[in-house]
Image (cartoon, rainbow, N blue to C red; front, side, top):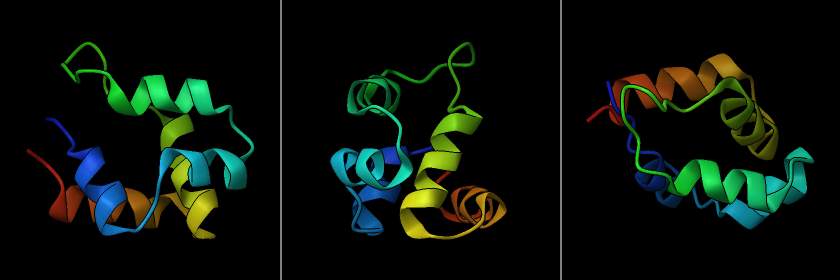
Length: 73
């Protein structure tokens, strides 16, 4: 299962910089994670979901639900 995280960020009006600033996670860490080629060995991790949730001031489960419903490849 692959997630189209770049489309999600674009549709949500988010950038990696905004997520890093609002979540407290480092820009470089998030940039590497969101721009890596996703495979079964390198899935999006909970830190990334938490960072997105913090940037949107919402719960992680809401982000996961949105990704599951609309952004699976």
